[in-house]
Length: 319
Ligand code: ACO
Image (tube, rainbow, N blue to C red; front, top):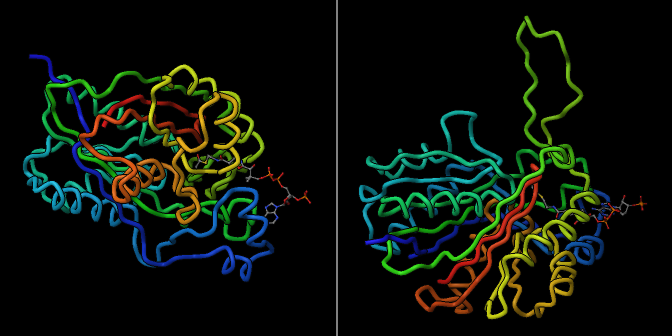
């Protein structure tokens, strides 16, 4: 019999340290008014002693507790992140070790703010081709790649992690998807450049390890390319849209452009900021917790990520 994938559990974890716009305005030349009116962001959580694998491990443990599944039942763990602890081991392997998911294979996906959508898409194929249970987590500690002297980026981002359990089902839940990338626009958003310090290496690079973003390019890209992508996926009877939480103005404009009421677009960037790969699963879990979304309800939703790469993509699914 044909096997499909369904989201059976959601969870999230954000670091305790909450940083308000007011606090940032004591640290750099910015204001609550500027940040709120341009982005909709009012606060974000920033780690004080945790790394990405710590946040993701907390999410994995919560998923197991909530679902009453055993780590040994997991077939795979995928983590989407652009801020891994190391180049290797992957964050997914660190999580696998921490929770003793001995049967699971584990790997990371690097697709910036589209990471969770990319990872969920890959995971769905793994389940459809025979795996029974997997974990898909988006987790970031963006605070470690932010240039805290650059007010144009420092005010935008936050740390956090969230994820889902994906398991085999007799019924179809994933109905359509479109993942895209454009590496020719790669330089619009870069982060984590590692300078080669070998004695043999002749070149020095002007690239920096810090996150650097041409905000205007990304803004225009989201209104043009992300809108087009979304309009090819969205269906008339869709209940809610969960877009990457970068900027409230972008969401308001996309809502008008594709003619879908603003109330159908869920948001939480107000208290999380832009958490890149974590932003969509954070919104998903918060919306399940506050009762707007219900697993098993058959609500039809669209998940849309967009960001560095450039990458973007949407998935249409039912809960
Ligand atoms: N506080 C106060 N003033 C500021 C700040 C700040 N934090 N940052 C910039 N400014 C100033 C600028 O210096 C500029 O001043 P000037 O006119 O005197 O030169 C003015 O505000 C306007 O700056 P802009 O960059 O033009 O502001 P804009 O309206 O474009 O908003 C923003 C910037 C919010 C970044 C917007 O471009 C945006 O949302 N872009 C999209 C970001 C995004 O969606 N990223 C998602 C992908 S992220 C990922 O993949 C990890």
